Amino acid sequence: MLPDQFLQELKYRSDIEQVVGSYVNLRRRGRTLSGLCPFHSEKSPSFTVYPESQSFYCFGCGAGGDVINFIRRIENLDYMEAIRFLAQRAGMQVPEDAGDDRTARLRQRILEINREAARCFHRTLMSDEGRPGRAYLIGRGLTRDTIVRFGIGYAAEGWDGLYKALREKGYSREELLQAHLISEGRSGGVYDSFRNRAIFPIIDLRGNVIAFGGRNLGEKGPKYLNSSDTPVFKKSRNLFALNFAKNSGRRELILCEGYMDVVSLHQAGFTNAVATLGTALTEEQARLIAQYAGEVLLSYDSDGPGQAATQRATGLLEAAGVRVRVLAIPDAKDPDEFIKKFGAERFQQLIEGSSSATDFAIGKLRQQHDITTAEGKVAFLKQFAVLMAGLPNPIEREVYLSKVCRELEVDKTAVAGQITREQYRRGAKERKKAERELIAPPPRQGGLNREDELLLRQHPREMKAEERLLRYLLRHPDRAEPLRERLPEERMLSESDREIYRVLLERCRTGQSLELTALGEQLPPQAVDRMTGWLLPGAAAVTAEEAEDCLRCLNDYAARMSREQLGQLSGEELRRYIEALNRQKNKQGD
Image 1 (cartoon, one colour):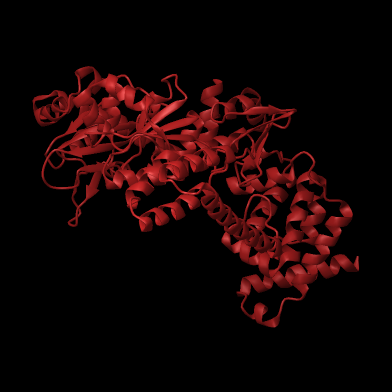
Image 2: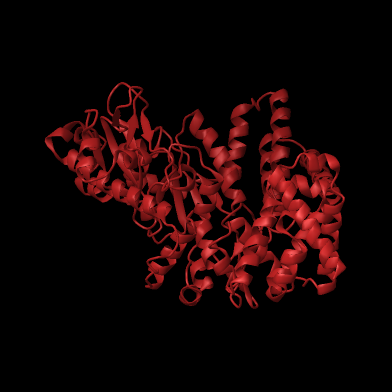
C-alpha cells in the first residue's frame, strides 16, 4: 500500500481546483466552484468543486471524490495509473513497491509497442516498399510536411512484416495480440492486422500513440479499418487530431467524419478540425468536446448518411452544453473535396455562412415535404411545431415561428397554438415521470448497481440502515471494534456495502487513514462516489442513537431469516451464520 505521507504530499501538490479546471470550465460561487459535469450530459451545471476539502461532487450523476478519483474517471485509469499520472505532473517519485501494477505495466508496454509500430509504418512509407502509400497520399494533395506532422505511414502488403519487426524489438506475441496489431488465424498462426493501407496514428492528449486508422489501397477489405479497443484505447472516448486542435487557440472545433477531411483542413490552415474514429459521435465524445470547445461546426459529408449523422450529433452536442452550427458543402461530398476544388478561402466563407442547428433541422423538414401543396404544408408545420416546442429559448422560438409563417403565408396564431399543445403534451410526460420517481424508493447517493436497486425495492429499511451505519463509521472510526463485534459483515444485504464495511473496519483496526485518497486504493470509484456524498458540507451526521437503531434493524432482519433461506446456505455459510447469532446472544447476555 502507498504510505499516507506520500498520498498527502501528492494531494498537496495536486490542487483540485487547478487539476479539474484544466478539464472543466469552472465558475466560482462563494467558497465553491461549479461547471458542467464531464461525466454525463447536462445543460445546467450540477458539478461542484470544494477547494476547502479538496473534493468534487456531481449532484446530477453522483460522481465524486478527490483529485485522484477525478483523474481515474476523466482519463479512464485505474488507481495506480492515476497516482502515477498525478505524480508525474507534480514531479514526484512513486514508491517502487506501491501496489500491483500489472495492468499499468501492460498499458505502458502497449503504448511502447504502438510508438514503435508508428515508426515502422512511417519508415515503410518513406522506403521503396511504400510507393503505393506515397502515391495515394500525394494524389490526395498532402505535402511531405503534413505527412510528417501527422506521422502518417504505410502498412505493406505482406502478411507479417510488422509482426517480425516488433518481435525483433523484444515484444511478445501475446503483447502484440493485446495491442491488436496482429490477429490470430484459425490454424493458430498470426498475421498483421493492417496490410496495404495508409496508416493514420491516433494520438492522445499526452502525445501517446494509442491506436491506428488504416485506409485501404486495394480492392479487398473495408475502406477504413480502425484499431479495436485495447487497454489504452476506446473508440467512443477519443477524437482524431484533438491533440493538435486543442492548441489551435480557438474555442470552436470543426467536427468531420474522416481522417482525410481533418488532415486536409489542417493543411489548409484550419487546425481546429477533429474527427470521430470510425463510429458515430458518442455521448463520451460529446462531453470530451465540451471540455475544449463552446461551439462546434459540424462538417459531415453531404450524402444521406452524413446528414443523418449531423442530426444525431446535434442532439448529443447540445445535451453536452455545446452550441452547434452546421456547414452546408455545395458541389462537393466532403470538406477534403471542397478545399481541393475551391481552396481554403472559399471554405472560410462557408464557415462564416454556416447555419444554426435549428436552421439545419428546418431545412431537413422542408426537404421531406412538398410545401407547394396544402397537404405537404400541413405535414411540415406539424413537425415544425414539434421542433419549436423543444426549443428552450422563447425568443428564438418566436423568431423562427414568425419567419416560417411569413414564408408559408399561414396564420401565426394557429401554428403557435399547435406549439403550445405540443409543449403541454411534453409537460404531461415530464409530470408522469416525476410522479413515478416520487413513488419509487429513493436512490442512495452515488447511484446503485442493478443488484442494489433490487435490494432497495425489496428491503428499503435494511438498505437505508446499512448506508447510515457506514456513514456513521466513516465519521466515527473509534466505534469500529464495537460495530465489528455486534454486526458481522455477512449480515449486510448488499455486496457493495459489505465491501465498504470490510475495508473501513480493517483500516480502523490497523490505524490507517479513512480519507478518500487512501480509500480509493482499495475501493472502486463508485464506492468513493457514494462516500463523497456522505461527507459533503451540510450533509446530516448520523448520531449514536440512530446508529443503534440501524444495528437493531439489521440484526432483527437476520433473526427473521426464514427456514427456506437457511436451507439454501452452504455448510460454511450456515456455520458462520450460527456463530454470528451465538456471538450476538452472548453480547446481549453480557
